[in-house]
Image 1: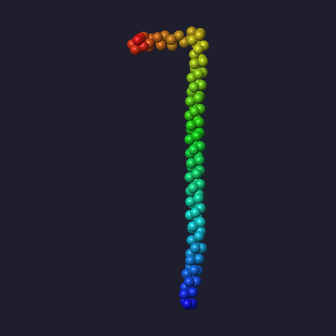
Image 2 (image 1 turned 135 degrees about the horizontal axis):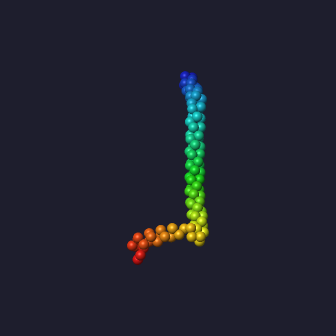
Image 3 (image 1 turned 90 degrees about the vertical axis):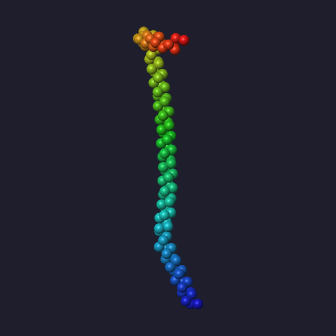
Length: 104
């Protein structure tokens, strides 16, 4: 029976030593998995923020284009009032006269 107890003690010591030896590697793997999860969350956050900014920039660009078009229309009105854009009217008349579908 003493041989069985000695073998059990030796096995227990070997298991404890193995656990102590492997514990840092287990901890490192766990830390790496946590770091990977945090990286993934950071990537998702940054991509989401970038997409939101891209959409915002597109909307701002569209708004700016509308404002430029409105400004252009606003500058064209005084030109027509002063007779400075008559050549555009004549060009439009010539194009309309050339287009047979516009006559109908």
